[in-house]
Amino acid sequence: MAQAAHKQNYSGTFVHQRGNQIDSLRVLHTADHEGEMLQLEAQDGTPRRLLRHNGEAYCILPGNPPVAQSAQASRRIFPALLPDDTDALLSNYRIRLDGTDRVAGQPCQIVLLEPRDQYRYGYSFCAAIPGGLMLKASLLEDSDENSDQFAFSELSLDPPSETTRRALKSEWQGHDRMQIMPAPVLPQETHWQINHVPDGFRLVSAVQRMMPGRPQPVSHLVYSDSLATVSVFIELPRKNVSATERPIRTGVTGAYIQTRFQHQITAMGEVPSATLMQFVNNVAPR
Image 1 (spheres, rainbow, N blue to C red):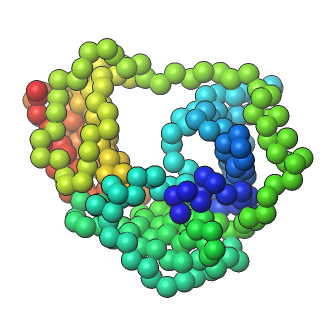
Image 2: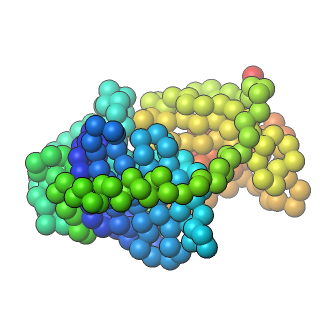
Image 3: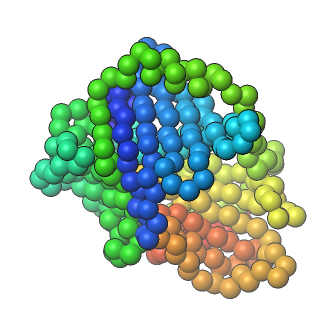
């Protein structure tokens, strides 16, 4: 499944359901000797498109002329949700086949990723037979109200015409990009660490950033188990902002906030609340 989303040609429409919100997106993906190209177009709300070519991406927003803004190319987009490193995946999840199904008229194999402990959620995928392209993906969280699911409603696995390929490449080259810089990373190292990290999570990055609305640098630590990701922010308390200890959950995304060492500590991610609490409770100065 991990490689099929990068190496196959496909086009169609998929639906993303996140709690009570449902979005429909049109996708076109091509793969050839020059690499991969992806076009993702929102079918609801404000018109917007994402174009991605190998390691570069930008978003086209409405305007006269349209505005092309740089975008985060490393972000995983359905159906390319799985990491390439399957060894790390297997150390944290058990894989189990669970029969077959049909999605968007295509037969598919149901694959369950079952967590090996209580620190992460499980996942259900349906992979096309044959080919292995992910046709459906669901995060298996306890409450149906917080469901997070992707599924194709219409899909073609036929190679795109040469006219379509040329139009996509022309679209990629036809806009002047507006570079949108992320919150700047400061050269000094963060002075915080997390002891007793939940099993399977590894430090991905640890930086200090200047962020909008914050007069002082914010330490940002990112941990991942290769599928689930947790971000931890450590900052001085802001005036007129409540920083009492509390869990927050919006759909499947949770956050846990606590004040310790005269700093506000926030952990966020699509993981159980107990996982976020363990991250926050084990933050300590170096």
